[in-house]
Amino acid sequence: MKRRMEKLEELRGKGIKPYALRYERTDMTSDIRDRFDALLDGGESGYTASLAGRIMALRRHGKACFADLADSGGRLQLMASVNSLGEASYAAFQDLDIGDWIGARGEVFKSRRGEITLRVSAFELLSKSLRPLPEKWHGLKDVELRYRQRYLDLMVNPEVKENLMVRVKTVRELRRFLDERGFVEVETPMLQPIPGGATARPFITFHQALGQNLYMRIAPELYLKRCVVGGMEKVYEINRNFRNEGISYKHNPEFTMLEFYWAYADYNDLAAFLEEMLADVVTSVKGTLSFEYQERNLDLTPPWRRITLMRAVSEAVGSEVSTRTPVEELRALANGHEVPTEKGWGAGKVATELFEKLVEPNLWEPTLVMDYPREVSPLARLHRDDPQLTERFELIVAGREVANAFSELIDPLDQRERFEEQARQREGGDEEAHVVDYDYLRALEYGMPPTGGLGLGVDRLVMLLTNTHSIREVILFPHLRSGN
RNA sequence: GGGCCGUUAGCUCAGUUAGGUAGAGCACCGGACUUUUAAUCCGGGUGUCCUGGGUUCGAUUCCCAGACGGCUCACCA
Image (cartoon, rainbow, N blue to C red; front, side, top):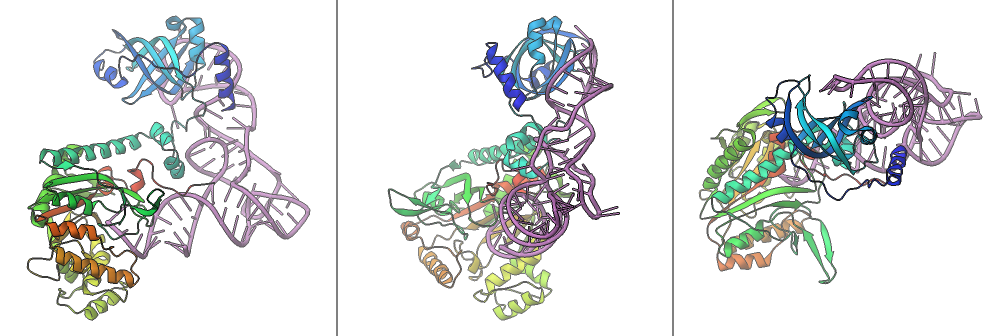
């Protein structure tokens, strides 16, 4: 770094500006590589290109010098020599450092060893790099540095960019799929006076002018449903949710969620739609529905297995349980399987806990778990055949929840009761119980059409598609504790 | 928040078994070299051994506390 600062001063002394304004680029390295792939070894193309990018490697050979130039399309070799540049300019080229941004112009040829190369006849320094790059061969492995200085990770570890592109494509394909089916994307508040739509601890912030607390949203759900009340029959939003919970390999404080609401549809429609959507999106992104995840095969080809939550729990505990099973019996089963319970919990919550501890981690192939208990689903419509259940399902893949969907609760009186139940749980010490949202109740009182709604964890889907273990591998700048 | 593990050069890592302030490869600096591509050859270690305290004649090494990270458990998606 010290040496490079000196170089910077030397350059300025020679009247060379180390930070240029612009450069007239004619081609990307990828274009050149595709276009002249068929050139014979040692052959000339007769084409003159201007490339721009960062120098990633330098191989100096006295009166000739090779460099690898990286742009967003890839890398291309440059060759500079006294013959091509002249003495003075060649000396300046030799003085470049790995990491410098340059623009280079010259004819494209293929070297004797078959490498497509630009013979530099003119170049200019576009931006001087003052810090040495991480090692070219081993790259940057220190995970802390990789996350804290992601720009370095992006520079030297190609798979980081590949994973990012899978994420970009996934989001793009989700949008395309929904747009093609008449859904419209809206933007609802990130700052909410009442944090609703999920049960989670929110981040709290304060609005000075209003003199009141606002909460970073934990879900867009209640606002999207207000859109449906207003007559928007197919709406969606892909954006961040914020939850003030623990950080782990599958949790980041801010994460990306797709939520859509579809008027006149129920949860059966949603299940079929989800199968179609993921099959379409994943095929577009990966070219296949069957791929490896964490050294096991994963096949997302629909139709997916469907099982009710009570059925799954019954199989796991080895005895029949249903919504008629008394809470004491469920507790006894939980104890027998070393699943801890808390005293305020009802039968529905205990059954769900049994499912999450005993069944969910073992569901590898995509599975639609149907009919969650009423007690754990304060915004879902009661099941048409059993009022202790709701018309709700979750999609579990590789042991993790990927999507959550239900026939929406549109009955304002029922919704009021459910909120009041949640309020009692809150008073009983459950900090994450849902807060009553009176304005939302008022919206429902104006009438909401029968609607199906679905939420999909985009980061978790991308983790599956990139075969990554940690959510931090699919989020560009994951949260870490700030150092001193 | 709990448990376990880790932190040494710009990067990737050795090492101090048993206390005497440290080494390799790449990168970097000087030299040779006009088709190399992890270029090669010759010469050169550039360091707050995470931080603070303790023990000791002496600590990067041993002890204690802390910071940050990883894995994991708990909460959650």
